[in-house]
Length: 241
Image 1 (cartoon, rainbow, N blue to C red):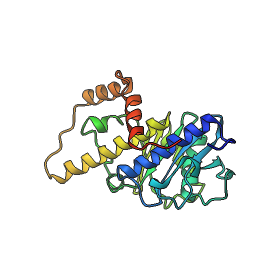
Image 2 (tube, rainbow, N blue to C red):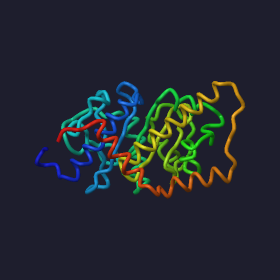
Image 3 (cartoon, rainbow, N blue to C red):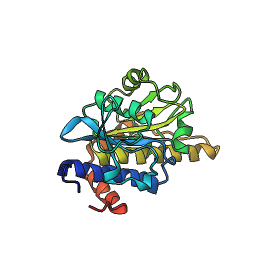
C-alpha cells in the first residue's frame, strides 16, 4: 500500500476494484466503457473512478483515479477519464450525500428494457426489490454535456436505481456492496423479464398489495442478507493487499 494513502481510502479502493472485477465476472462489462465510482470516506467531495482504457478485469486498487466533483484529477498520475463517467458520476455524488457508490452499465438486457415503453415490470421478487425505488431518465444523447446533469439528478431524486432510457442502468448504494448488489439484481430482473416476454405467453403480475409487501420485506432485510452477500462476493474476486 502506498504510504500516502490512508487505510480507509485503500479499503475503499479494494472494494471498488472488486466491483469492477465482479462486473466483468458476471458479464456485465462493455469492453472499456461504463464506469463505477466510490466516494472517499475522509474526503466526501472527492471520488474514485477507473482510468479510461482499462478492462474491468484489469482494475486494481492502485489504478483507480481520484477526481473532484468538477471532474478534475486531484491525485495520482495523469490518466484519461471517460467524459461520460465524469458527467454522470460527479452529478450523482454531488447531489446525493448518501451515495457511497454509483454503478452504471450498458448490458444487452439492461439496454433492451430501457428501450421498452413499459420499462421494468413488477413480474417477480427480483424486480420487486425496485418497487417504489426505480427512476427513469430520458435519453439526451451520449452523456457528454454537463447541462444534462441537472435533469439527470432531478429524475433520480432519492431513488436507489434508475433506468437511463435507450442507454442502460444505474444504481446508487449507501455502501459499495449495496450498489453492486442492486446492479446485479436489476440486471437479473431485466434478463428475467426479457425471457418471460420472449415466451409469447401472457404475463402474470402479482397483485399490488403483494408487490408492496415484497418491497417492504426487502427493505427490512431481516436476515442481514446484504452484508452476507457482499462477503461472499468478495471471495469470488480476491484483491491482493
